[in-house]
Image 1 (cartoon, rainbow, N blue to C red):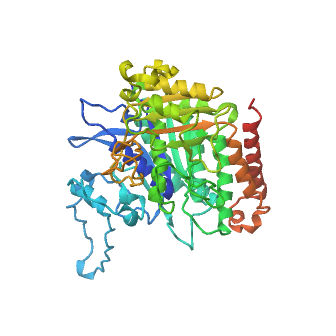
Image 2 (cartoon, helix red, strand yellow):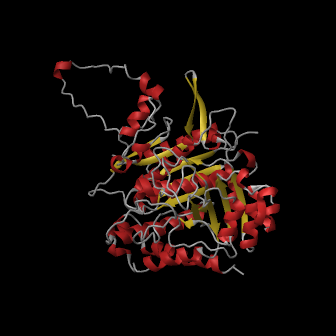
Image 3 (cartoon, helix red, strand yellow):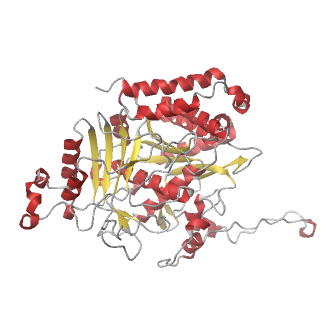
Length: 541
């Protein structure tokens, strides 16, 4: 059966932090052993091609970031074959050398981790200082990129205060310039034409700066040109910051962006490790058995990427060949509800030597996850959800009859698979919620450059222990993640509306007005928040 391919698009600095961790996780979890094949189909998100005498896999990906963020990474990608092919090529000099003044730009510094990858030597046992060495997402990048993947926005420089790329209309204007949009759209077209049975697009982009406008314009182009399903993740950097007037500009960007993508995307889920999201990120989300630094993009983006890698198993699992991106979107965007919440349980709370039947009994009808969508606490009444669980093997379902003891009196003991038992728990605990469940036996493998954020009571295999600490690094974990639609999403819209309604006139933010955003357009986007809020309230019985 032909692979149903998906093209991923990443726009923005923090979106690329998230995306880099996501691609790293996929590379780490590839299986090249024919005797132990992976449960997941890599060709859904990867393209396979012959380069010379080698078969290579590269992400089916287009990304964009500002000038000054790529470091050592070339716009032509990082195929080692391409680099080696050009090492000995000397440029043809058309002038007398003694009359030329040559300026040589020093090579960009590479992190110790990237150097170890390029050396080809095993880095097992080597400790890297990712927390201090990571300045950009390229400092922990594993996969090789195709020559059309990387796109640099040369008109703006990262971190510039004189000409920042910080407003929604700046991104829209960039797309309208033929030099950028024609090149980017042509790369999209080439990727699409390579596919046999393309099912749609995944789009990650920063939602509170200029990339909000670029992302919205790109999504509109995808809808107009291809008519495929579009699953969108607007990401919010949760790095703590002092309050300032620019926080309102970020909120305005978000409001304008959501209004636009709400009309064009199939489904979208805002992502942040901050509880508020706007005007400031708020307190970092507390994740049980994990200690992470909210001031490090390298840490927070890893949590978001872990959720994306697991919840996307629904349309990447070899066992669920008929499950498509369009099915996921259709299940959750009923009645025009385009926004959904993202959840993560990392690690899924399995105690050492505990069976799933006992673990679910300990939950006592509760939810094991935390919300990664700002200003949203996921409820379980009258909801629709798509859940994915990985890393709980059938061998840990229950005890055999001769050892079962109290397990035998539980109704779940009749279940013969992880999928059946978890479905029973969900149906009994949240009977008014519709659920699509995906399960996979293989856990999430953990290795560098994934941050070491697990508490000492999490053992090497991801189980938690009540009475001992692990002796080495965590090498795998069970994970659950999901997308959820329900009346709890109304709170997210209400929270954003309550903040942005304080901006009574755009004249205080003249840069928006100077860029063509009119007061009426802004107010229409603000009122749209209330319309969306009501759509989650009116139809709940």
